[in-house]
Image (cartoon, rainbow, N blue to C red; front, side, top):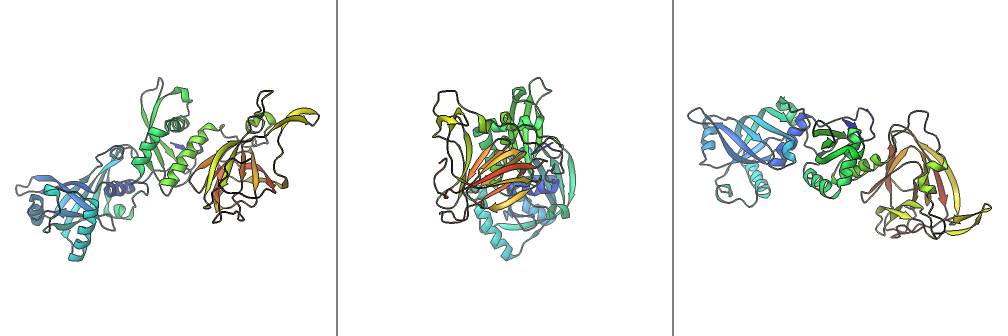
Length: 428
């Protein structure tokens, strides 16, 4: 496995088998119900369901169906559940084993309403009928066969393990996230695969994202001249909570691959000018403006924050410190602060204290805007931000930030007298 910062921390985690089982059963909402016939031969038939609070299926059964007659004679049965579509089909398959019992009228009425919402459009034998019966499958154990995350092993899970687990919060969005990344963010997927396998991009034959959960992702990747494609797990540095958080984390993960490998202890020194391409990547002689990039964390009128990559303009070639140089006078500084952020620092949503520049001297850190965009910054990167409390926006703006990797991040913060603005990205 590989973690977000290429470390070997305890964050190397995958959802448990019980959590995967709950996720699969929640996602699918139908399965193959195996009941025992009059001839003592098991019969597998289609059955749809909704779930109770413990994740136990409440099955909708036809009054005259063969499987209904079977369970009236023998309530012991099993329900096999597996996603039909990729990529969820790769995750796992589950057989819930136990006995059924008829639910009370109140529960049946609520199950009827929920079933109509989940299984709308049924026709023929699948169309709702006023004589439909609802039976709860009382789970006694769960037979789980893992796919990507469980070394393809089969396990018997107890009813207690299954009921205590929770379905993954990204389950309803994972397929769409995978599809988007593989179609629209191909380069990001390749970068993450390169990072996870520890090989340069040119040695990758190909890579695809397979699945996303709250703890990380699965990739299918192959290297040139390698033994073949393999499933790779990349673990997030922290749990993600929703679709937006997952997309931001995937963007951050791809950006981290572009940064230099982390420094070892004792090497977190202030870099020389030659190590600061963001500050000293000047244009060719004779051009009006140098190539002077910066990141702008800006505020829209509604108080949301956004991240834009921009370049400064308005430079003049003139005598400065005895020699001709490209010069641009920025906002007047009011205070300069040198700060060190310790490894592991995670800051909740907050505004910046003043309109300011943040220059990264060593280490890595990230900033996340309220629109979900993320920027990871390393030595030489310059951030300009004006998401202050006194912003003219409709509400107080803010951002999240934190340290990336196992070593501290050192910064120079230059606070300036410039007034905060709204709806002006890249305004320097």
